[in-house]
Length: 170
Image (cartoon, rainbow, N blue to C red):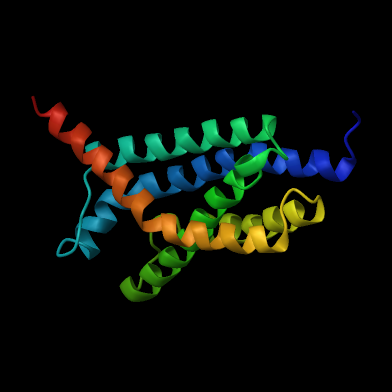
């Protein structure tokens, strides 16, 4: 079966998604520990030993899920998995913007959030709809799923990082 140029472009976008996620996480990792110590000490500051495993876990999961989805497009839930991931990144971008405004300085990850994650989310959803991988209703519910999953994914990944930190103390 021959694939259209538009379909190949969309598949390429799904393959690029975890790499862009990794870029965003790399930007966050450069200054998150120092930033959280300055601005979030009363709420939740993170250590490097906690933060890096959390980033590796969620970035690795994005790679695995996106590449599994590429091989299963059009088959049930797999058409929606990349949209869920990108929706989480889309909503995460707005938390970076809010933290930047609140703190008065650029939050770790804000540049890739604004310049990459938001535009890429819009393009990915548009491509999924245009190629017929998802319906408009499915795209809407994928965005809702990203919003619902956002906080639990962050908490679970940081929980994993905390576990790694505790185990490293032995």
